[in-house]
Image (cartoon, rainbow, N blue to C red; front, top):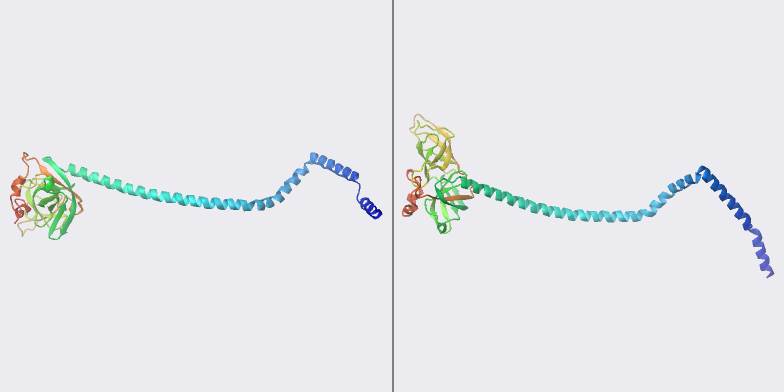
Length: 308
């Protein structure tokens, strides 16, 4: 006990008394407060300490910010990819819709053009789609999807938006075969609108060209003259556009001139044609189809006045 108490006395004698320490720190605090109020130097110290501590704060908060930025990056990327896929799908849908609308507009324009091309004596017309085409050098035929069930008959006139296409030569229950005006076996009685000169336009085997082989060299024909059906021959009424003269050459050693015409109809590009019925009481009507039905096909293929 004596040793213990002696040891405690020695330890306590080494430590300074609490009173002087309190007084010292109290005075120091008062001095610091005074100078802080007077000069504001503590603010500068805090400013410097904040600058020194900022890298530590950044280092402490960086992992969390990095994780958040990474998560937001991938989330935004996934959202952008999803939006991009939606926009691509919508773009495809709009493209398809635009193509459909364009096709409908073209179809409506063709229908309006066909209706505008109808002669005044037409009492009925049927729109027929082209099923197949035979455009060989010696044969120009179209097969359309209208036949006897809608009243189609042999030697019936067909037109498109430009003008005369041809005539039916064979009729089935659900389809019909057309001989085009450019078929080498076909001939159309025509006349020039400018002066009323009548002649015959013959097919050449070229879908855009007709020949006028029966014009004398002294004929009043000029390039650019419009040809229309003359109404002769008993198949086509007068006034349907047939073509435009593109060449008229005179040879003094020949009796007949060399003349060519460009077809008014777009025969090679036609997808639809219009079959026509005419007013039986109109003076420009073609021959009665009932009479034509009694004739053999060979006599119907060429209208009256065609070369044999």
